[in-house]
Length: 132
Image (tube, rainbow, N blue to C red; front, side, top):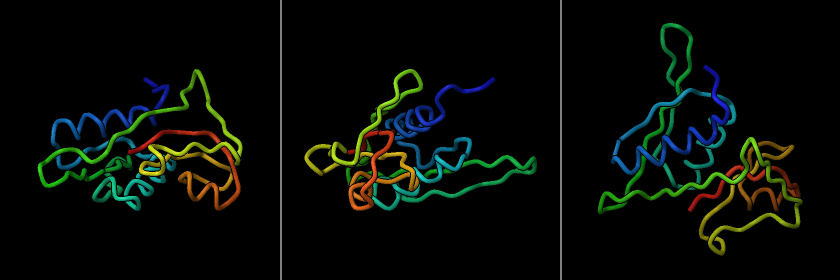
């Protein structure tokens, strides 16, 4: 069965895994999911991620979740652009999340970028999600 929104599925698995205090979560891998996971790692929202290949050549993205000293989740995600309603922004209208404390992740012609790097690259694109 095909999935209509794999990025939303990724965010839901991260949210649910964080709430359940899992150490790691596994999900089907894709280029876009790897790039989003790379941004989340660089920005300090997850510990790490890696690609696991099984004997049938299926790639799985394993994400290691991060918690604070009180075992409370440090990542909050909100999907913005959905298959039924895509949200595009121009380079001058890139949203900032929580006055710069969070970030928005965009799909641009130059790849998957954070709001700050999209402003520096002077490109707009589709707003995938907000992270804080």
